[in-house]
Length: 274
Ligand code: NAD
Image 1: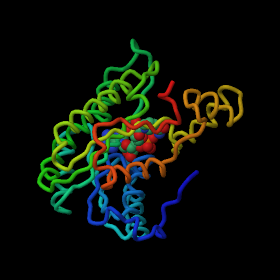
Image 2: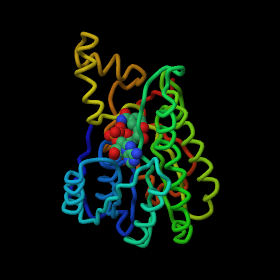
Image 3: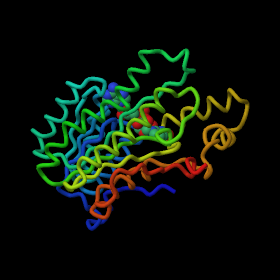
């Protein structure tokens, strides 16, 4: 069930007022859902990701109008460490703090190992793993100074189990679960937590776009595509929603989650219980 996040969200739930959150890859999908949930909870937001400038401006304006928070945007390319450094520096210059860092940007490519293009391997490792190393190392000094920080790494069920033909994605997602543990251990005494969120299939426009194509390709109904193809590994046979991912992220940012650090939290309908 979707839990709509609206401007009607009661003031008592604006637990992140005064905090600044940067969400990489937040121009669409899960990242946008997380950014909206953090904004609904009162945090000022730095958006990042690829996309059409006018649409990104509209997203920022909507966020400010709906939730009464500041929303800025960094076009930083997550494959470029110097671009990531500029994004973190600009966040510090604009807001004077960075409390919540969500490493979400990610891409996928599917091919057997022997045919996996080397440049795709490098690109996936850069965006899905190395970018989180760079944002984290650059964000930590301000978090240490404030004695507060929340880092959430959007991994995947593929951070916990493998699937064929996804060598780079699975390697990067397992890697980010490892980075999460090390970050948690190095910061545990300083009011900083770092956790990985491990979604199974999440309903996003990209997933929706696959359903009709797969139905045609296999000659089966949309329902069968969802149940037997896309969600074949997911026991609850339901997609998670971006709103649910947003709510989990907000929870991890609150005081209630202050003792949760270094975990890889499956949000996968039972996939990794197999
Ligand atoms: P999406 O394609 O909708 O969003 C990806 C975001 O990353 C976009 O904002 C895109 O612009 C950004 N991005 C891509 N390359 C970039 C680059 N070089 N620099 C900066 N930003 C870049 O995908 P999504 O499904 O929302 O996925 C978001 C994250 O969730 C990814 O890390 C993905 O691996 C993970 N995930 C998704 C699912 C799912 O079912 N959708 C499941 C598990 C994990």
